[in-house]
Image (cartoon, rainbow, N blue to C red; front, top):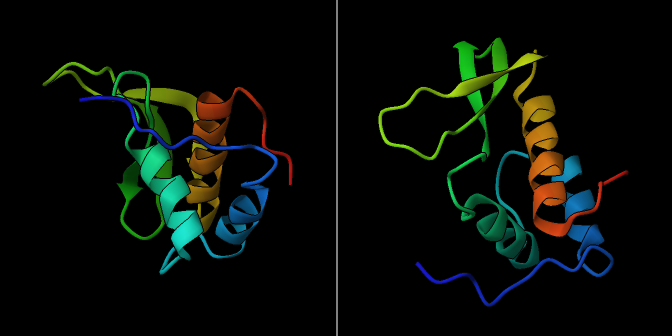
Length: 105
């Protein structure tokens, strides 16, 4: 699949990161949805994902191998008690992977 023609501009798109932090679950503006589509559409190898350890109570951070039928590689010590906290952490990690810049809000 060809790479997207869209890119994240860390300075111009920072407001969308702030929007996501305020409301990581639910409906988003068109600008934020563009950012999410980019971050979620990256190649699978090494992509950060959330793994439900206990429904509605605990999530853990993992990375995909990019190979079919291979298990998710869990990131040691990264667990979350709320979905919002988990989604925000994954957003920051994917942002850094896509832009090369840490997202400090």
